[in-house]
Length: 227
Image (cartoon, rainbow, N blue to C red; front, side, top):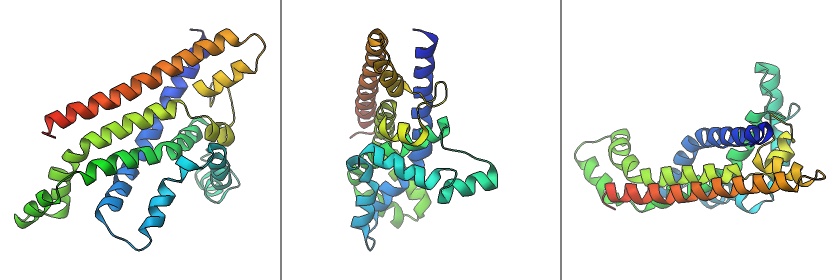
């Protein structure tokens, strides 16, 4: 691979990893609320969490631009107060990717959580275990297959995120040009067919490996935990 290809692969892996690390704690919290709590307007929370699955990625990128741009409500405050700029940066690319893959993690974790017998938590409660003890010793270990599978799936999907990233942080070589953006650039460049083919092969391979890894991890943990 050329230096530009290696750079795109490195950046894609970095952006996808940071997006998962950023979104995973919130995904666990939201999945737990949706599965274990009955709140007023919960159906709207559920719908809002899953919006990135149905909205065009360009729309998500545009909304991020309005909120986190240097003149946005949140981005302007971050820039003026802490000097943090998200737009046109790899950190912004990770944020856009995290938003797009967040529903995948929530869904996987929620399904895993709903499969846990509530009687186990009730039994621990009768034995004097507090809420945090029950969560740490019973709920969290049993939902671990969903957490890891969701994280790996989100990571794999993050490697292919295009619309939200290019809309929010543009297509800057070495900074925001991930694999999908590098592929797009190659397709727009005369004589770039060979490069595009190589990048497409790399993207396909990484995505397939990620999905297989997610399934293997989930199966392995289910066997270990006796599911």
